[in-house]
Structure formats: structure tokens, C-alpha cells
Amino acid sequence: MRRVVAVIFHAPMGETEPERFVEAGRLASTEDLTHVLRSRVDEVVVVASGSHERLGSLDADVVRPNPESPFDFGATLKQLVRERRPDVLLYFGSGSGGLLGSESLDTLLAFAERKEPGALFNNFYSCDFAAFASASALLDVPFPANDNGLGFALSDAGIPCCALPRSVETEFDIDTPTDLLLLRASGRGGPALRQYLAETYLDHPMLAAICDRLADRSSLAYLYGRINPTTWGTFEQQVACRTSGTVEGRGMRAYGDARPLLLQSAFLDASPADFFDRLSEVADAAVLDTRPLLAVNGRLPPASDRFASDLFLAKEIDDARWRAFTVAAADASIPVLLGGHSLVSGGLYLLAEACWKGRDLVRRLHPEPYTGRNRGT
Image 1 (tube, rainbow, N blue to C red):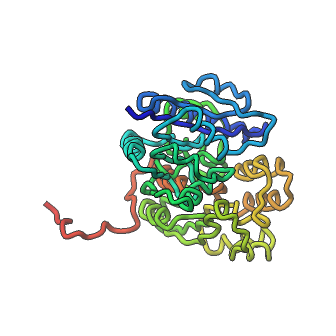
Image 2 (spheres, rainbow, N blue to C red):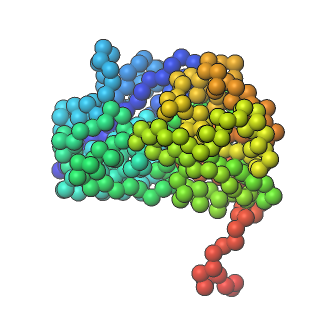
């Protein structure tokens, strides 16, 4: 019998309200995931520092990294492989995998049961979760300090890598407050996470208006950021409005690419207010992955500033550029949704679902494709 171990990594966050919101949401999602995994694997291990009360409710072996040493994802994962000796290893970042159904989990486990080394990623270019066959082979691979470049590291080491089909299950990750609010609006998530979201009072000032535009055939929504073309195509088929936009910054964390971006350059040449004035001339709503737009030489401000911006809490932002941008976004004449990579990946699927809640309308702008079998009966 092959030994199957699931490892979930959870990083603690700061003390601002948006950060606490995201951390508690990730741990609630982890609670749901550990409950599902318990019946399918031999051991569930959660690597987590901090003292969040939700850690005590996890049905898992909680391992705490050495607080006196800088955390290293790759070194910690290798240490767990040495100590736990799994034949099959499942890896999850906390906040990922919470929407996986039985069929998707079966796919992960079936892949990892292969005798030869191999890795199956939710996203090869920016890993949130993965399954590893012949886990001991990982010990020979130079691992990155974080999970974003894990696919490149394994591929460069000659280990065959595959990726799951893109869907809301595989792409959604709790990375920002916006992700959690989209989850609540769509009604998705496990029992612990749904209960947590039902009890929180945090809200988004523009989400309802964004949903109105997406369900309006006469509207046009502008999308910006690290968007996979397949995800964009699926989103466009599920909403009523038209879409346009710009894809920029893909792989910015995995590659560490600091080259200038086209729309970012145009934004830097204008004031934030001018930027949103121009945006309102070409669109009726906007969904913006702000990280590539506002990064300076690839660097971002702390999560406290980023998350406050996502929720339009401009007074709580220390970084002057992000504060000015957030004020301009709040004052824009069109509704704007701000977030990170997950907003324009799994978040787009949830947004397409949320916009139809309570509406009895024809969903698609586009007709059904003709297959020769669309005849009436």
C-alpha cells in the first residue's frame, strides 16, 4: 500500500482588518479541505506559524516552522518528505483547493499513484496546489523559496510536469479580500468557509454594480492583468456583456520579470484620475489586477496596503501611489473591481456566476455553436 500524505502550507498575515479577514478565510477553507482529505489520504499535515484560533480546529497534524529562521518553502517541503516518507504527496497552499470536487481529487490521487516521478499542477506557471508521484524524487530537485516557481524547478530538473484543465475548481485561490467576497456572492465554498463568510460584515462597494453591468448586453467590461486566454474566453461566454482589455504581467512572480508593461507605462504617464477618466470613456465597468499595474520594478507594498486598496479603504493605505490610485478608482464614473491574480483567474468564473444571482435572463450574448445536432424535436 502506497503512503499518501497531504501537506497544506499556511502563512500568517498582519493585524489589519482586511488581512485578518483573508487569513481567517484561508483557514476556514483549510478546515473544509482537511475534512475532505481525511478519508482519502493517510496523513494531513498543516505547516503554519502564528496563533490564530482556527488552527486549533483543524483535523490535521499542525507543524510550526522555526520562528528564529527565515521561512523557506522548498527547504520545509523537503524536510517533510524526509520525515514523513510519503510515496505520494499532495501539496496545497492554504486558500487553494477549497472548491475541488470528488472527481478532481480522484484525478490528483490517480496521477500521483504512478510509479515514475511526475507532477500535476493546478497552474504550472504559478502553483497553488499540486500532486507528486514518487515523492522521494523531490529531494534531488533545487527548490525555490516560494511555490510560484515550483513548476519551472521540477521541469528544469527533468521531472515530467502536467497541468489540470482550467476551471473554477482548479484556478480559484483565496489571495485577497475580493476573492472572499466573490466567493460569498456566488454561494460557493465548504461549510466552514460559508459559515465564516455569512458571519462577516465586510462588503464591497461596487460588486453589485459590476454584476449589473455583466448581465447587461449593452455594456462593455474592461479586463486587465495576468489573464489566461482560456479563462477570458470562458468568462466571455458566460456573461451577457461584451469584453475588452489588456493581458499583462503573466509570470511576473515565477519569472521575476521586471520589464516595463505597456498599460503600466501609460498609467505612469497620467494621473490616477486621468487614467480612470480614460477608462470610463471606453468601458462601462472594469476588473483590474492591480499588482502588475502598480508594481514598481516588480516590487509591491505590504499586504496591508494592497488589501485596503482592494476594499477601497484609502485612508488605511500608507503607500502614496496606491492611496491616490484607490481614491481615483472610488471616484470613477464606472464601477471598478480591484484585486490580484486570483481575481482574473478563478475570480472571473465566480464573477460570471454571481452576476446571474436573482436574475431570470438569457445568459449569453453569444449563440450556441452549431454542431449539426441543434435541431428542434
